[in-house]
Length: 500
Length: 101
Image (cartoon, rainbow over all chains, first blue to last red; front, side, top):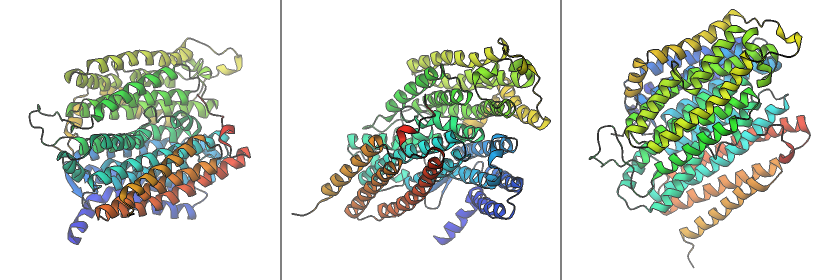
């Protein structure tokens, strides 16, 4: 047993690296108060090192520390997404004007970002309910602090208070669900729970209640309706870099832990009559109907409420709720094809959503405003940013030739192939609605000009920021035109430890 | 009369409901945090009851983790309440309303 544990440590290197980096960053912050860039450098190094270890894990399919954490292609894919967005967010933070109001505490900010990334990495691999709970809480507690980081701004502290209250409520509900599952099956290990459930002696209604209560915790992380109430407020009130990170990485972690939970616990291992790549749910609790309903409500509400938003961050917050709804459609179909579609969508979503948030930040750095009304004439004042934002928004809508189209294409194909035609229609209608509010921003940028004369001077952007935008912009277009490698990678990454 | 598992489960369900209703209806942020603690502790009661009933120690291990995490969450939550109080001079949730819709 001890040898086993020691051997497992080598498969836990990415997380260990992040933990060490976190501790070093805290100490460095104490020594170099005046220059937070040092801490940023340490965090960045740690993230890149951890990324190298993660890439080293590709192809592994094992479970470590007594089935606490799975190291499988599925986890590796999500870890890559989380680390990439963490690296981007640190680069964003270096050029944020908003964060300079708290420059003395910036060291803490960078070290907490590392801690947040660690929590999300654990979410990607957790295969025990105890580990899932701890990973979710680790990332939640760090994000509460980061959401309220610019504490002098009243909306920031308000955002983090709302975040803590909703977070506490939903983690309490999730724990209650976990405790019922434990009482019904006598175990916290998802494989063992699945084994007990497959014998069919557990009452279906109790299981349904427990499953739905647990879903609250995951739904809160991915901001699915009706657990989304915190999302718009937190996204608007937090520093924009944190908003970008929460909208991508936090959702990725939430999706990873949710898919692993449902696939691990509720899939019938003995169903052999199915075609290759399809799964069957255990009878007693038809959880995918619940997820389908949540998916429809999530995307519809997200898109409809986004229609009358006039703050860019809030608009993108509702748009990110809608995107969570689209991605939930891929869970409903119960097939590897749907899962691969979610992975493709996530990789695309990483670039387009971070890109949109970054441009909002660059413009806010210069104009001090995130109001859609203040985007009038941006297309002329900053041509490059205007074009880039246009591409990101078109991609978020899901129109060709951008990567967003490919993400939606695979999702809808998976739905149609498994007969969920009504859900595909709802999804397509929602994409049409979303075009309206994205186009509203474009109309303000290009077709309307600023009434007052003084706001017509050009906005010039530092070269580094142009380069950062390009790093995000090129994949959005390139993946829209040549997507075979991404799709193949996603199809290879659907494999989870312990499931067929 | 022997105290069976049902009594413990019933008690913790009642405590949990009180906690949820408290979070949803109380207006003072500190009381809301107390209600969240009540929810978490009722979960602990459920876990310990199941653990004793099943003769399995895993549930009790989870209880320790829940207590530790609850302490961390309370520390962060109270710090946030203090920073909010410095800005607004109130902890009433109804008055904390810059961000809406």
